[in-house]
Length: 287
Length: 272
Image 1 (cartoon, one colour):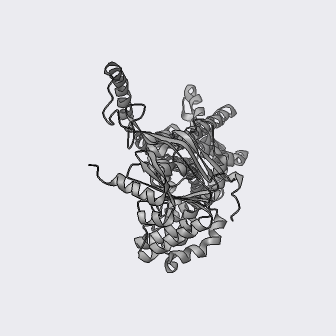
Image 2 (cartoon, one colour):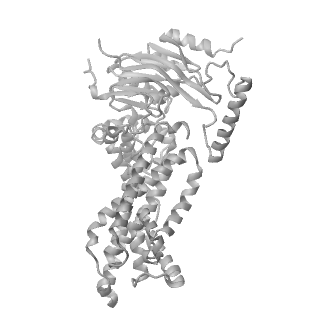
């Protein structure tokens, strides 16, 4: 006779209308799946490509070149005395992590519909795996940036004018804020996309627009004084400005703005989790 | 007396006819407008909207809704193998989706005592670019296995699947038979107290099918509880002693499999 299953395995299935019910235990039980999905993303993404993981670095590099030619040489927007290529690259490292995560998470429910229709596992695992697997690209890009940065700082005569600041120690916090924002907004879009496919088309456009609203190709200082408070509500503006301040000592850093932007990120994250959690329970019925 | 392994009480699932499939915001607005109009019209002449006839037993409380499952109750004791049969659209798959937590019921509740695993369609979650080995791990984890568990069963899974030679090849180069064999092998080695199976025995060539049925018999004889949904009456007949017959979202028969099969055949024969 087999021993009776342990009490902890009792699963109760019933309509659950509470918004706040969250299956943390289930999430923990599937942590191995999270690890394997992250591994799968690495292995599968660049299979059958010639350059493989080099694409991680080439993407922001090419964008930097394009920005340098168009905005640095052509339109000539101020870069606060920093060489344009460093100025853009520095902002593009956190920005491309953000935009990659956001676009992938937005599609995570509809894109995996076939899987979700057939097996149950905590749906949040997929967005979490996206956040983690994109970290690899982020780190590779950060190291490439550091290469250019050190070259400029120590091997060129103008290198003496840039000064790294103590804000470098806050880089992990900035990364956390970036991840929280992309996860929060991504979950919102993913949840809405289940019902309204319109958002799927909107998100590409929205990400692009968001980049122009964030000081990626321009310094925050070119924004007229009376509108400047608005960028406090864009968590990515704080991240990008801080990144530049950390490496170059330029840019506008105000602790009031930074705390507002951190709270905005948290707000996105919490509401995103709530709505996603609500939708995931029955979303296979509408997919 | 031990508590039943699966206990289902008054389980119901309501679906909205209009919202199945793609919708856009404009559609939703249009539906909302029509619903408002519809309600007024309904109030005036007391007629139902087209879709389901008002006397249809599956018609829901609102015009565009229907009950895919209506007030289902049954229980399964530990170690029992229960068959579930019924025509297309009778509610079998909906029951399956609710029990395996893919979607939530509208009303009622179900209690599963023990670790539950479900085998829906084999091969879900296989990634074509990954090798057989990598997919065994990934698929096992998707089905709810811990990594250590998969490691322990790895050799057994590979042996069962009969594809040892190709284990380090991307599965996209597999023949469809090899693919299915590997997928079934992973699913069949799940350690669970309760196993929910929906139409998975029609896999591979005849020899492999026989192996699958044997494996299922094996599972049942280990004291695990099995809920087996199938159109394969032969498999139901040989694996189960008790069966439920579903029709139009309700359980119309609950009892011995041989009588259940007769009942099902009568349901399926054209009405005169």
